[in-house]
Length: 40
Image 1 (cartoon, rainbow, N blue to C red):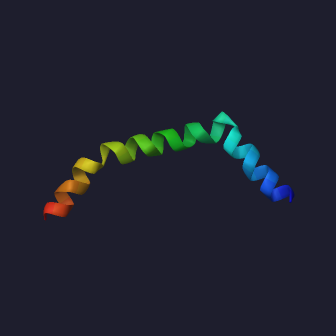
Image 2 (image 1 turned 90 degrees about the vertical axis):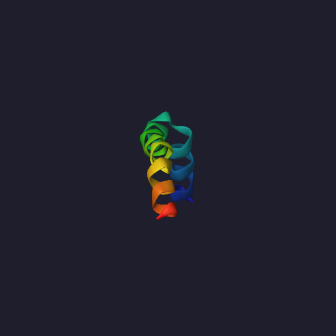
């Protein structure tokens, strides 16, 4: 129970969101490289 509540708190807090934001930005910039791999 405590672990589940902790996960919810982490999702609500903006801290982890900032950690995911840079990762999402990298994934958004990477599609160009991914398309090159697909063409190859």
